[in-house]
Image 1: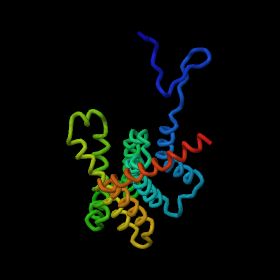
Image 2: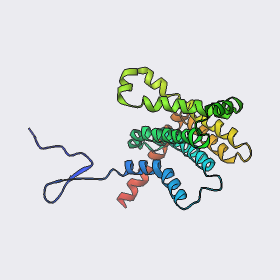
Image 3: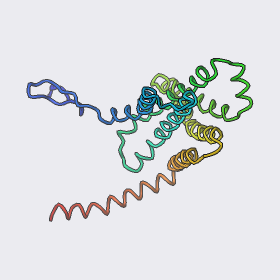
Image 4: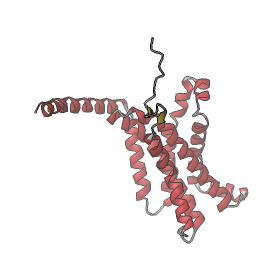
Length: 233
């Protein structure tokens, strides 16, 4: 019986017999994407580039960052369908948590920095401006998904866990609607987000996924003979 230790794909023996851990570049890349907006915001603050109304700038910037990360988390499954890059699936949760983090910072900026915890004024604005209600609904969904994203809740909720996390398909359109109603004038960027969300949700439809899988198989079968001829030449 072979009793030697099994090496994981991320470890390799060195010349002296010790184990050297290989960096997980995909994980590093995912966290870099997640923290990029925060780093850029810190850079803009450090160099005094937050515009004449810095609080409003930060508030809207964080909201766009939350929506961007939410769209990226929705893109994971379609990318896997097209490329079969299954290693990406374990990072879907990370992207979703970053989306919630930016929403929480967005809400904090609105409630604390912008309105100084003036709950009476915040309540008045909420009743007068529907886009705040829509954004809050999207944020509450993200909160529920973030809290229940851990293994404990997966086991506790069972089949209901998957049903609950399908609410992300509602949160994304709500976030887009919030953005469109907020901007009012130049809605090109919100509509671009909306088009991306619509495309990613459509890519999840079973007929679309079957079509993509079939197309990928055909492309692979056609490319295989060409690869063999290249190897034999």
